Image (cartoon, rainbow, N blue to C red):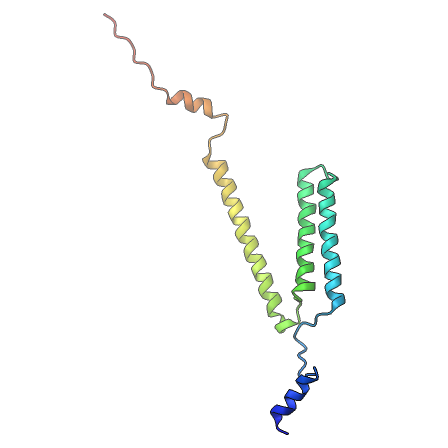
Length: 144
């Protein structure tokens, strides 16, 4: 029997001698845990908004943002199987770099937009003065 046939016989029985420790191993219970956590992390913020539990808007934004971040982490761990062991940690490291880069880009964009709005747009208190100064002054009448 050749080496090729020996390897094929292992595959035919569903057994493979080459188990890679760095590959993610998915289990039904792992997927169900992620699914249940995702449902909970969706239902709680939905209830908080619909029942108007948090009346202060900045607090509500922070709480809902916190739930969103936790749900992203649950998806990354349970569904994308990201951890520090896969591919020597490079997948997790590249994800962290991407998150930091996107956060800097979004923060910088919002900062520029806010300051352009604050510094470039006229305020309502200056509007009457601008309208008044834009009208031409009447020429003095010449005396006969």
